[in-house]
Image (tube, rainbow, N blue to C red; front, side, top):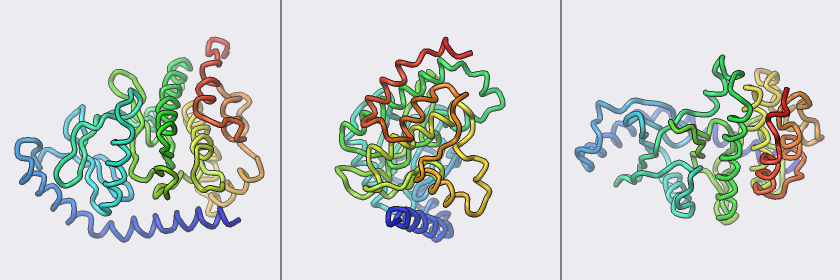
Length: 284
């Protein structure tokens, strides 16, 4: 119960922080963009930046079709964490490329299509299983690379994976990760966390990855039917604690999903082995 309380306390702090900063973001962002124009002449034009999305402490803008600008508009610690993570990560084919770091701490990253958006296209059910398997295996390799460097992502999900124009999957968003066992400022999504001690670990990342596999294969989140229910989040956490999971018997990779959820994988390398052992041609 203590772990559940801690998880919800962190989630509550996230919500309060998000809304408390929303009122000040426009002014902060204008100031940051003005500084970009003043300190990096010729790199960007303030009038060409298009808003794409925002999270707890950063806003993402389009630079062009291949690059985005991530502006840390709230908390300098978040920028420092992401910078530290990228320094530790180095280069990996399944982790988004850091293209530049600007003087104010903002970063330029390669651009791609968010996997969740792709999986929710009306035509997503026509995407071959083999192609989805390729994406998931690439994602698992990226997370294995993180874990090998003692980094826990702490927010694994299809919202934090992108597909490049070459159809390669890459991981994004490391501002809330845990490094060397330190605290994680990120929170897993409501459907992808099972109360655990420690609160974030390789096991919690693997559990969330099982939820990502489910979403890629079905186009829906686990227990999606409970999302609109007021007690839905609490109910899902309790179901997971009781080892009650959505039925996956008719879903490709059902065994891999269940083993992620049941904690039977001790590493992402074992997950990769499970993915590679799957034969998509056997799916009818």
